[in-house]
Length: 473
Ligand code: ADP
Image 1 (cartoon, rainbow, N blue to C red):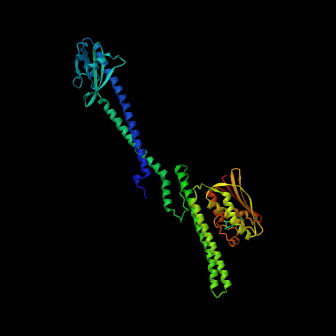
Image 2 (cartoon, protein in one colour):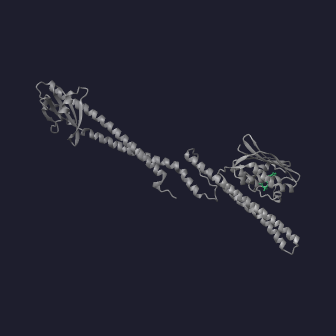
Image 3 (cartoon, rainbow, N blue to C red):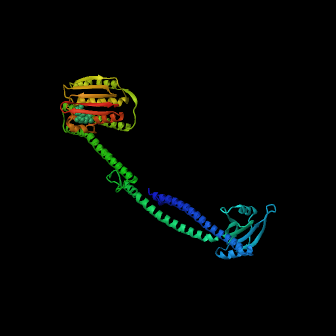
């Protein structure tokens, strides 16, 4: 599967990143714009107050000057703002309404009156609390008016209005600066972000390519994460460990199938060789009998190997499952021991039953019987005539220990770690001769694993061995 660009992680991460960043920039831009606008309006308000005070000063300084003249002079003084100045005189409340506009509107536009309530509010306002308003209904140069109502003397108010056009160009300039800086920041951030994301994801791409090249034939490839110690590095390490484990198990499987073919081939080669030699000429019935006997034995060996292999694969299928039916282990042990009595007798051995405690374990009877039989068969097989095999089962400190002890040939120290491997036989000629397949202890180990038991071995060459299975410790 090839990842399409728009579906790629780097594209989606960059997109998210850019969207979030754009949101932040827009919010920040809006905030800056508002603060800047408030600042500009505050400055404008200060100038409105200057104009209103100017009107009042001119009127009070020069006797005989009409409000209209004072307003005109002040408008002239502040030409750059093109203020709209009006003088309003309030009538008594019961006379109703605005008594008069004392002076006509001075400024770029026609006079306009606000409602009476607003004028009365301004009249009441003390000097700390001047009444400024933005009048949306009245537009000059397509911008609303900012108006100050300053009560001057008695019922007289100076009304000064300036079009917000004067701050519009500053605001526009700010918007352009914010847009250009924001755009540049976003462009740089998205390019930088994309670069970092791509760099971070590079080992993933190399992992994909390596994984594509890996096959069961070549598991030696590993992904190179450089010296990264981050999550991606951890992922790559885990992936490499997984390939190593896979490589090991593939090697094991190959080795195993090689061993299986070899082990199955040996009896067949023997049978074939003997039968071929036998058929070369006429033989006595005694000779036919001998070869048929040996063929029977080899067939038996083949059967044992195949049975053991099937049993092992059944055990492997059970791995990870819990077997929890209760089994009377002492009864199983006694039954297996009894079934081996003829073999013990035939070999001239002594079989001793030491202590056998009543013991219940969780598992499956068939598996336990097979495990005990394999241990007992080995003890019988590797103990020469006149020797002794001793079996016991005892509960000790919360654990149940089943042990099979013999006074046989023993196992060399260096072989002990390998005896549980499949097809491992310490002494091949002896094992063949005695009918061993090399799978017996491997089965014992797997059964113990499935049942959650532990195996201990002690052995001394020439003196004997003891195998212990420890349940529940
Ligand atoms: P085998 O079928 O050859 O007995 P196992 O897997 O049962 O295979 O045992 C592996 C090897 O361990 C045997 O070939 C033998 O050399 C050694 N072994 C196992 N049990 C004993 C024992 N009781 N005494 C001595 N050697 C033993």
